Image (cartoon, rainbow, N blue to C red; front, side, top):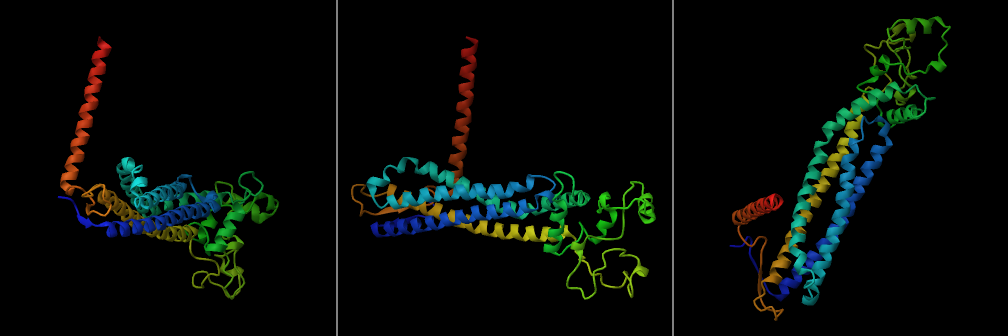
Length: 343
């Protein structure tokens, strides 16, 4: 017995074709939306590509762009088929390829669903990518004269001001690296010699942060140097006083931004997937209702439409039998080829 059997007359078939046609062109716009979201996400990642540990982070936006383009193509084709279904002579040319097209649509819908799930799952590897990228980027902050790294300072400063964050995990990350270039250090000064000699790596480390870490909303002028030295500043205790630099780390800030963006895109792609499933089911009803006309020569005769010609269990059994038959056929061909080779 067919799954979700529906009886149609001419009026119902025309209304079905018109409705599915409208849904298909709405789905074309949804495909444009998926493409646009992928493009926007890719641009946002490229803005801070220097802070990404690898290029794998661009896999998801590239996938969204690809799926959006495919969605536009198949939905435009499906809309054309539904439009021509109102004219039996025009629909006849699409009939032979319609079954394969519907199978392709089912596979595409499954891939679109997987794409939506990836939008939620990819937050985990993005966290590690940002952690490593920020860590290495902060080490190159001082290399303003080094080709390929000269923009790192500007990128980090803009990021810290835009996202109101400081360091990787927090502002203390800047205490562990030399972020002032040797070009701006007076190596004859005792303070510089003492700081460089106080660590095994010979770096100029200090309890200070770049200016971009300063919180402009703080009523007190920014204390960005000697942050742990209470005697260096009047009426100051870094243990109890709220610091006037951003406390949140940039990894958390970027992860929150990109994670929220990915969750929004994932939710929208899920909605697009539901729309794609709807138009695929609609086209299946159009195809089956036109294939079962009581009198093919009379367009006004009644017909039946369905999602599956048989039950789900029977359909699954038929698919498995066909796959087994194809497997046996390939083995027979291999055996005949081997016999021919021996002969």
